[in-house]
Length: 403
Image (cartoon, rainbow, N blue to C red):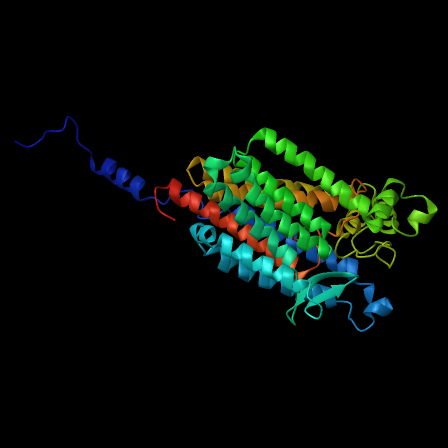
């Protein structure tokens, strides 16, 4: 006997139900705001790099360069970084998890190569680069994104041992300690600080014992203090930071800091106008790299600086939101990696801005996505492409599909 339904669909109702079932989901395929904020930061940075570097050709050091030399190279860096980002976006997160230990070992090998005389490139007394002819590769930048992947993979593999010191923390401490030793030989204390923050942050999010975490944090503070105290150069820079306006300091170790503060002071609320900076006229060293924010502050004022801060804040917050979504659907590695990328971008941005504003001692860290430099922009784009892929796989899984 045929089953009799207590109701039946009219023609229009059936069509409406079919249309509802076949209508495409309104959920975006990928996080378009994340892409646009990233691109806007890079383009804004390119404009400011051009403004900050346009007068460098007047210096004997850059006499053979053209006014647009740094602009053209930064544009090429951005274009190549975006293409690499597209390729990275196509790689599944599971593949990154499998490759994480091997990438870590390979990057350690690059850090060793940097220290070999005749192989590593020395710039301003620091041996941090490997020459690839078209650009200089900085392995310490590569280690930042690799540290995110390695720490996230380690935390997932050792989840049951996170409350134990010997199995949950010591192996990671040994790995990061080896990285730190190689970075201090370059020397690159700033990169070491960022990598330590990445590793500690991911271990904390992964559930490491809070008592051990607090003790380890105190130990790290003591280690960094000892490094500064035992290094005459770093110790002198610290004393100069504490009293930058003293005549001897302002003409020596605190020279960059005092001119950075002068730049912010000249900019006031709305700046002196794009291209109108005086400090970039050979007063403020490294204006197009480490101290780009000071030029933004002088030319675009507090308003321009706040725009940059808000965009970076949104970027970091979005990374943590994506990580939270991944963990909620049991993608722990992806979630920790996303939050690790947020920690990396957030910590490096905070240190760079703190140095520019005189809140922290001078360190050679660039402003992510914005400062001049091929390796920095490229690795930032790789990290954000991985973040975008995590978000993409979250969306696919929330629809019931498989990444």
